[in-house]
Image 1 (cartoon, rainbow, N blue to C red):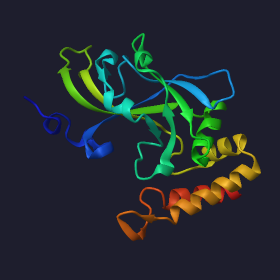
Image 2: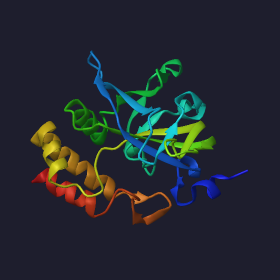
Image 3: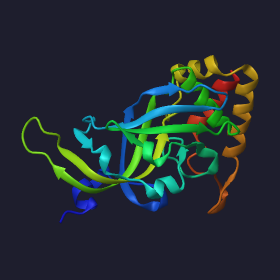
Image 4: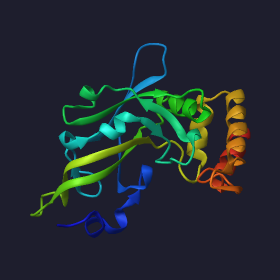
Length: 225
């Protein structure tokens, strides 16, 4: 029997809890809900063939572990509570409907990055989601028209929003400026500088992992520009 390592090799990444798994991203459907709460509906995954020429069977999700702690992180980053953008409040019996894995995200607007994500989604700029999962069973395709692989059963570990690219450029900068006031941009810049200066829990003299660096330094300059 093939193992994850022999089947997927370099495609395996370390997911939450240190488990090896796969990430699959897609452009998703986004729908605002009526009401005063910062809640939006997303489609996180479908039965369609993805860019790896693979298919995830949406009826094969095992999600008990995910539903026990359904936080939605920023770009698969679990390094800090500051990376929590919200949580999925969609009931278990509504997670998969019509061959689609949904997400009803209650945004953590007390977190400036969660507030930014909500406003970008409202403005139509945030349309990407990615799932982290462990393949449990799969079949390999045969024939020219068949997908290379179909995941028949998978353990869902998390759903991420892809908010800010690794190298923020003019496009994302204009999007941020279009949805945040000058005061909100200053507050976000101050907050980013604060979390970048916090020590790593495992290395008190080192900067916080996955938060500091040139990308966010450039974002701070852009927000204050």
